[in-house]
Image 1: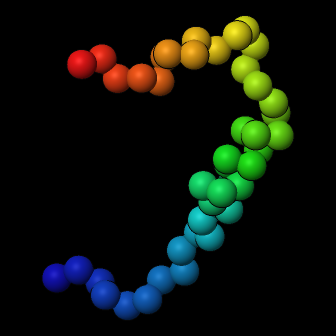
Image 2: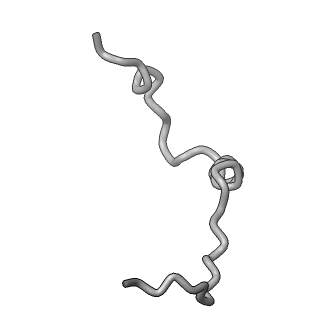
Length: 44
């Protein structure tokens, strides 16, 4: 039978939220090279 008593676990590393990641990406600026204006459109 497994031991169900509480144990001290290693604290998780601080994880960045999605908002923080987006803000960081935006702060870096545009990616090198001109983006293709139709790259985001879906093919039909």
